[in-house]
Image (cartoon, rainbow, N blue to C red; front, side, top):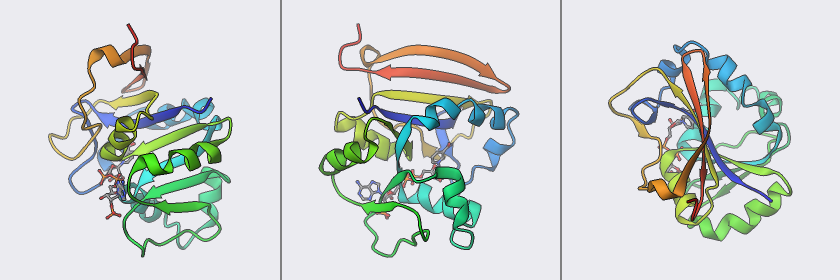
Length: 190
Ligand SMILES: NC(=O)c1ccc[n+]([C@@H]2O[C@H](COP(=O)([O-])OP(=O)(O)OC[C@H]3O[C@@H](n4cnc5c(N)ncnc54)[C@H](OP(=O)(O)O)[C@@H]3O)[C@@H](O)[C@H]2O)c1
């Protein structure tokens, strides 16, 4: 059964990017590469990526993917990527399976599930888009790499109220200066 999993790095105070959409603060924290490598098994079970347009553009710019489109395959293989955006002029990486969609998440769930097949869906962020999946009943797990840093402001991790009876902590691990935490998100977990 396909699961919808939000996996991201975050600050202690719950931000996934600073106010300039930079992740430089994250790359400065010891253990980043190991904590990404630790996601390897999860990533191999992922069939579809989902992200908002700010995240997508950040990835394009960071890796210069419009100039070096072959790098997309290196990172993502042939996984389908759903980018949520209301814009019609979003630049697309040549040769990549990128599907730009907009509007209610509910309207896209069947297609996303179908594209994932037996595999999982990686909700990459941002936080509000993941919140929209939560609202639609499509958030099964949250996997956090909490970096030893605070920012005070920035892009929020998950701007929703999810009470403790919906969350169950299932795993805790230290990797360098990161605390990796996994939570199941359920309807009635107690
Ligand atoms: N720490 C990490 O590991 C990590 C992980 C992921 C992301 N990030 C960073 O976090 C930041 C997140 O940025 P963000 O909060 O702006 O979130 P985002 O989800 O990446 O982008 C938000 C944009 O997506 C589009 N969108 C969202 N929902 C939509 C819907 N239902 N229909 C149509 N379009 C929709 C809208 O843009 P338009 O309609 O204008 O296109 C919206 O402004 C980025 O800087 C990213 O690089 C960090």
